[in-house]
Length: 439
Image (cartoon, rainbow, N blue to C red; front, side, top):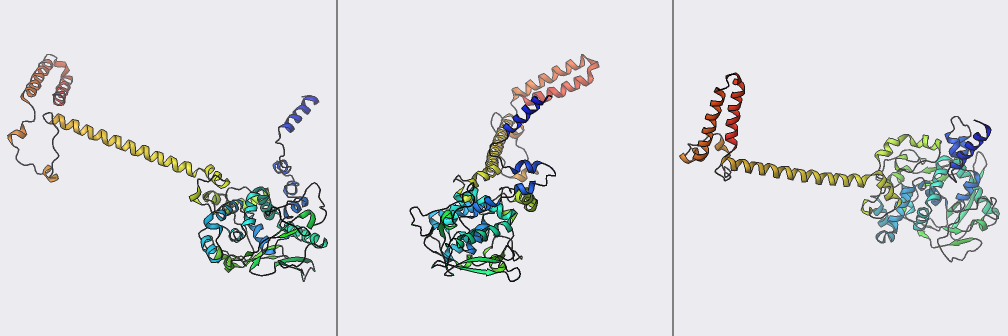
């Protein structure tokens, strides 16, 4: 192969690659490539871009969003559930009671108190999944970039204590590293800020990666880039079970409170949040390291095809959850079973009908052209009563005479062929059966 042919082949292969394919895909496929893990990771620019619209949320709300983003299908299902008229007005104990039957992570249940946030995560599902992937694979980086964004907002003079929130600085006693904590001004009411990232953080530092921006209040008037909507009342039974541990870059869990909310899921004993791979559903993990860490229970996930939180009463609504359920074949299997059952029942009916018809014909042949009535006393088959003269006369005289004539003919034929003893005998038996079978 000359150099021109080789270059032509390489060009054809490059053209055949999917447009917009992730750069890390080829690196993952290359065995022994040390750069594959790095290329699979989200870049700092991407992390800042995706965290920009939520980094200034109160700590506990932000923690719930990060945890919930690792279960994107649960997010979609919960948003649909919360939007239904019967559920949209639920609050406090009524909301807690209604959620008991749902097999969702407590972070998902906590977000039902913030319908706008939950709906935003469902509508922006691609962003939600990316956020969850980043949190699972680069937890330390996510923590660091949240603090970086908060510092940028503070430096711009746009992150302060207000009527809606309390902003404080704390330092790690060992490392002396300072971090910013955002808490609600009132413990039982939480305000979710809507803000313009390019204003709140100052001039954006990555022009090629403009920040995401969520605004669910069309026409809202922003003050220094912020808008505060109505506060959300907190249901204590769904809240207060997690907190950021900025020193160790993890989310601490109150085990007892978590298990009380988590009534339909396995109990936990670890006081730091752990992702549960069995409730990921069919959503794949983004990179090789995460797949190896959480994908070991793939058999368990396959058995758990019924997604956590899937509302079977809504199978008629076409959503991403329903489509995945269809791919798993649950409905098709059910339909197939129903059809198979119908066919089997139909076959059984046909066979029963054929047997009844056969019995009826047999009875016709035994009687004088009429089916014999069923005997009422089953035990009479064991003890035969004395037969009447009519009972012995089961065939007409003409029929008996024909049988005798055929028997005589058969015997004369056998006598004229002495070598065919066995054949003649068989013929005699055959003739007898033939006579008995015909009238």
